[in-house]
Amino acid sequence: PEEKKKVLEKVPLAVRLLKGIHLGPGTGTDLHSIIKHFTTDKTELKAMENYMTDRKFSINVTVDYEQWRSSLLKTSPEFEQIHQRLNREIVIWAQKGTPIMKGQCGLDKVLELLACILILFSQEHGGKFSKKIGQIYDCWRLCLWRYLDHQNLLQKAKTELYNGALSMLDITKQIWRIEQKCI
Image 1: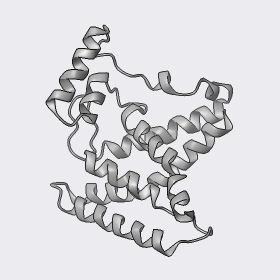
Image 2: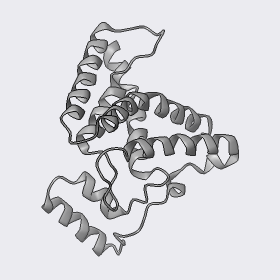
Image 3: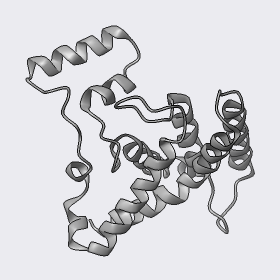
Image 4: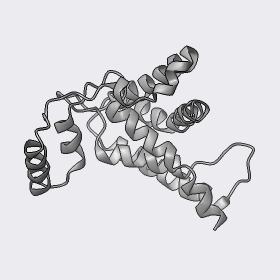
C-alpha cells in the first residue's frame, strides 16, 4: 500500500508533462491534431470529428497556451515567467524527436508513455527509498534507452531525448509547485 501511494501521488506530474507536450507554449496545436493523437482508430476519430461538426466546433482552432494556464499565475509575474519557461522546456524536449509535421510534436506515443512511467516510478533523493520501486524504475529506464536505440535518429537526438525524459520529473515537479502556490 505504501509503495502504491508513492507511485500514485506522482500522477499529477505525469498529467502536467502531457499538458506541456500538447499545449505548451510554441506547440500551436489545433484541436484536430490533439484528438488525432489520442484516438486509436479511424472510427473513433470519425466519431469525434462528427461530434465537433455537430456542435459547431472548428477543428482548426489552435489551443492557445494562455487559455489553459491558471489566471492565478497572473498575480505573480515571477511565477508566470518561471512557469512559462518550464513549459517551454517540455515543448523543446518534445520536438527533438522525429521530424515535426504540422500540428504534431516530435515524440511518439511510446516515448510519451515511457516518460510518464519514469515519472511515476521515480523516487526522491534522501526520501524513504523502496528497492522494489527502484528496480521497476531501472527496468523502465532501460526500456526507454532500448526503444530510443532502435529508432532511426541521430545518436545526439537519442541521447537528448533520453536525458530529457529523465529530467521531466524535476521540471514537472517545479511546475506543479508553482501551480499549487497560486491556488
